[in-house]
Image (cartoon, rainbow, N blue to C red; front, side, top):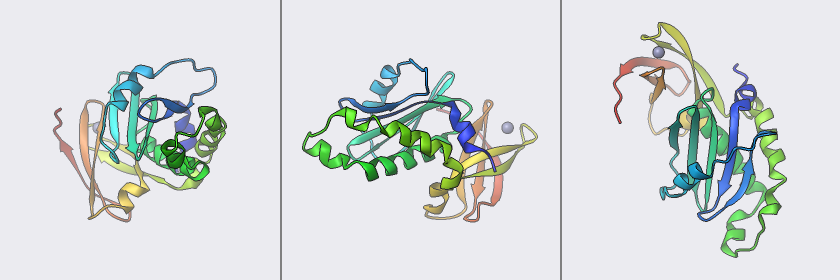
Length: 197
Ligand SMILES: [Zn+2]
């Protein structure tokens, strides 16, 4: 099994915001970078419950709006989007277990210092990531690279699917493959697909 905790060492920030301000931010030790411009773009997106991906040169950013909060994770290109999504899913569950954040926001009754110890929870989630069992790594052949790629998928993506096999596009090195994954995580087909945007 892939060491997901090691891959997640490439995480550059994790931010939890309301529409108006950041309530929590995690960064690796000795990181003084600011992601405020990226976060301003993220906050302008009004859509809820859908993960959005931003490619930004050397960085990947994933964000989702869930109820009154916006969760954003950024990393270098070593981390696949599905792994960042799985991290956000885990963090949002733990954050809402520890804090009754929706009622704090409703009654406007909190100070962001309440959340500073949550940094330790993020460190814990990252270091225990393999035991959380929320992702799988699949071996997928690519007909362009002529090699086997390791594709990380969230369990929630496969297990919550409405039908099988589930299609997933893996975009890498300037080309993309479409893989079909069944409910046992077996690869049922791989096609080269054209991409535009
Ligand atoms: Zn390839």
